[in-house]
Structures are given as structure tokens and as C-alpha cells.
Image (tube, rainbow, N blue to C red; front, side):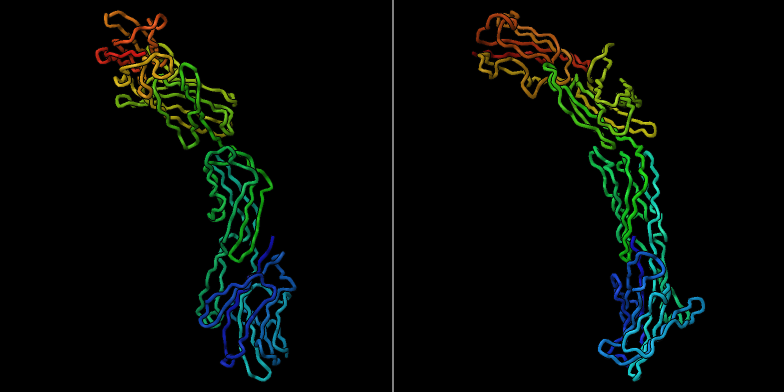
Length: 487
């Protein structure tokens, strides 16, 4: 891990002779120099050094004072260090006489404030420069993890604390009280967290913003919590550009549960074919609409980090009843792809599917530590029989076009349990009859009773009635009419 030595200096002129040759303090080992403007009329810098140890400084680190870039007249350099306790200056080192540059070596440097007085032998320049030496000892000691069912909290423990302030002063304020320090917060310009395993594999829309949150040295992963065991790494760049990183030497156990309720629906009651209807994720319920008998299948096999499952189906509350009634339940320990098919009470019997109404299906998934759930909202339309669903003509000639007298596509009866279809000729004789489930009626093909000889072209009369899954009986008078048979 790299260490940083930040050198802050303030240039305070004591003589007016320094107009052409401006003295300054420099360092050839600084990683960067940040300009500031704390003192009016003179430029300051914070010199940042990168080192492998905190103290002592490297032998190559030093403060260098120059009496002028273009002047080589011998000068005396007197270095002194500020005693903060009593605001006196203690002698540190003197170069006499040297040409134009003096260096205060690493052996003489410790953290604190320094002043160097430059006096040329020809007395053409006398000036005083000041600087503060700050040793950035920041390091990451460890990362503490707290894993709960709601989320994982990772917190850095650092020395010193990442957001502790340090204080710098103005030499004039120190030597001419009162003085006021200026707090500079160490802070962090960048904090980046990473997991060393994919902790959200299989999650629909994981929130990865936790990776670059700067919440005072800690981060919470909760949308969703980690679902797989992993170690974690944090990388920090502080305000002085110092970089550090830490990887947990341990792995953090993932205990949170991520349930998934996958739903399929029967789209053809005759062929018994099923299609995908969607998936309910954590904090993201699924809403479905259909017609009775609305047949659905539910599976939990892709839920994450769970080993026990409970399915419950509720008939939702109405204005007359504020309680939700459990209409079916299933408890499973199988983590595979078991499909649950709801069973509903209807007229004293059990049917496989949903009758008209609104429902909630809840999957509760759990392990030894945590529990979570997802829900599927279901709305099944009330029964209806639209007169516009009944055609007024058909052509049973085998051309695969309008060959049957049956409900118009897109306007089939909604949530009808049974229908009765009667077709009569002009003499009142019954030529076709169907009594059974509405969804299973395939239509009249123009033959006598659906199996005999072809009926002649002409006008026929029908009566259609039935009963919905919601118990509503449909009046036969609303569904009487005529149909033309053409060949």
C-alpha cells in the first residue's frame, strides 16, 4: 500500500528586494503539487509524496529552498521548525554559504511547520519562506461485514479514520496571536466496492450503484441483498491522491432469499397446450388477466438460496368482506421445477382453474435464516355472452374459410361454464345440438346433428343459452336468431 507525505507551504515575504528573483520551496520527489490561494498575493502548494512507509521519510524526500532561478550568488539558508505549544521557532539546520539552493534532508524532517530564511552574501535579497509538512498515514486496516436478511453492510476500518480532519495554520497567525486553524478533511475522492463473485446471478434487475457509494466509508447492498457467498474488495483514493485497497481474507455468507414465481397458462383447452405467462420477482409482482376457467401453473424452481416453499392462493377482499380467504395451499421442500396447479372450490366440487373474481397467489420461500415472498395478482372476467359473437352466415364447403357456424374469433363468450346451442330448420325440426363447456365447442359444420348428411342451403334458426362460471344464467331470448347456410 502506498503512503503519502503531503507538504503544505505558505510563502511570506519579509523584504521588498525579491522582485526579480522570486524564492520558492520545491521538491523533486513529490508525486503531485496542488495549488491553493490561502494567502493573498502569493501562491501556495500542497506537495504530495508517495512512500512505502509512514515514518521516517525516505532519504530522497526533502524540502528545497532556492534563492532565485537566475541568480547564483552565495546565500545563507537558516531552517527552523515551529513549536506549536509556545509558538517559538526552534533551529533545525543551516547551510552557509551555499550557491542558490539548500535542502532540508529527510533525516531532519518530521511532521510540522518549517520556516527558512534566505540571505544572500551580497545582501541583494533577504526573504522568508514557510511550509507545513503533513505525513499522510492513511491505510485500510480491515472491512467489517454484517449480513442480514435485508442486506449486507460493509464498513472500512482505517487508520486514521478516513474522514478525520487535520489542522493547518498560518505562520503569521501563529507568531502574532490570535490564530485560527483551518480544518482540512482527509476525505475520499473515490471509493469503489466490488464483490469477487457474482452475488446477483439470476436477478432480474440488480441495483449495482452500491459499488461507488461514498457513505462515510461504509456501503449497504440491499437491492437485493447478496445471494451468493463472496469476498469483497474496496479501493480508495484519498484527497491527496493516495490509493489503497483491501480484500476481505474471509468470505461473507449469503443468507438472503430471492423468490421467483414463474407462471404458465393454458392457452388451448382442447389441445391442452401451455405458454409462459411471466415471472414475479422480489418487490415486483406479476399481474395477469384471463377468462374462466383460467388455468394456471406455478413453479418456484429458479428461486435463489431457498430450500422450502409455501404456495397460497387467496380470494381477494370485497366491499362486503374485508378478509381474504385462502382457497388453496401447497407446501413443498422440492427445490426442483415442481409445478403447482391451483384447485378451486366451485358448486361443492374442486375445479382446476380460476372462476370469475380477483385473486392473489403468494410464494413464500425460506431457508434456515431468512424468508421472503412474491405475489401474482389475478383478475378473471365475469361471465358474458355477446350477441355480436354469433355469425349470421357460414359456408361449409371445405375451403377452410368460414366452414363452421361458431363464435366469431375475438368475441367468444367470456367465463362461460356451460353453453347450449340448438339449430332448427324452417319447419322447426332440430338439426344440431351442443351442450357442454363453452371452450370446447368447435361449431356446427352444416351436417345433420353434426355427423349425418349435409344440410341444404337456406335459413336456419338458433337458440344459444348457458351459465357462467360466476353462476349467472343467460336469458335464452337474448340469443335467438337466424343464420344463412351457403355452399
